[in-house]
Length: 380
Image (cartoon, rainbow, N blue to C red; front, side, top):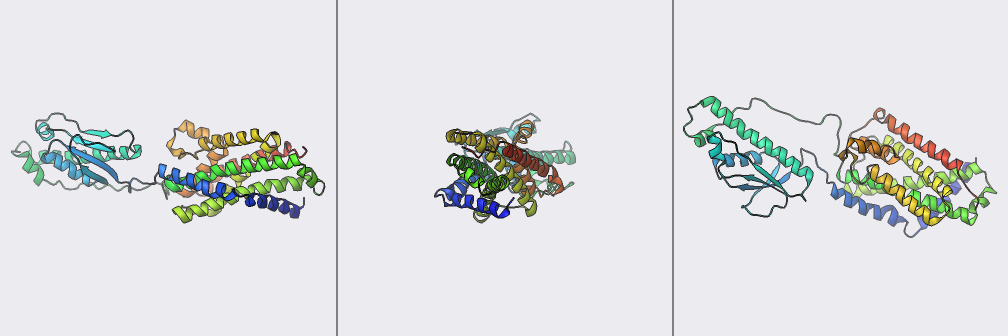
């Protein structure tokens, strides 16, 4: 095996790819457009930071409805009081008429949280939780007032307004583990789109160019001057570098344009990326060897890339799906690399916590490497 020859073959393949007029469009511009779309589709937020818009329709106009609105203002809400019949674009809390009167009489009454089906689901669930917390605050004041006064309350409204129960319990909440950034927004879309377009670039270019070189007899001519091992490693290494080049370009562009967060374990991030690109490199050479016709190769590459991307967590954060679907994602290298990226970038994962990811992606790389060697075809 001649390492000088290997480097010459790899450099030549990369030079041909980079000279393509559309190279940087497919490697940089088009992926960034996808990253922007997915970044805004899953906006980044945390429960501490999220501020939810909520409309209030107060039909009661009583001291109790005022207390409820005051309790809601203590939460992270963007409150806007609107009149009845107003168009609800996101979500609205309806305080029914007669709320205070029913409470005085000990009767059941319902608050109505009306949600527009087209509004953000996560924000609506957050609003529901905050409304429950606000109701509990008002109930605590009522229960405490009755407990102190017994049956001697002559004016419930005046007594309620003047009563402020002491804070008996303080609750502090914080993240368990080492969560750095929520797996959403551009911190998810940049690595997801990078993985997706590495699939497209390496599979389409790697398989297609290999197929074209075999058709023209270039591989046979190269074998007259070098060994099979040098030829194969050179072709394999060029596609590995192509995937890593796209990864570096998109990660750096994501950092500059969108403030993408790499995490704190850069060496582990680099190693897991190399293993992923290695597995995809083997697939590209395997497809280029097995498929003879260019149009079939293109269709097969697009189908494989979309299937692995969708089921592997590139189209949406894999944490959003059900456990069975998460299990399915680990059938593919994309499932392991996306989970590893989330562990490293968002949860501060350590080397030990990613041991299985390294082993599995390494196994994928070896399996596809040996398969591509077994079926490697250089003749026309």
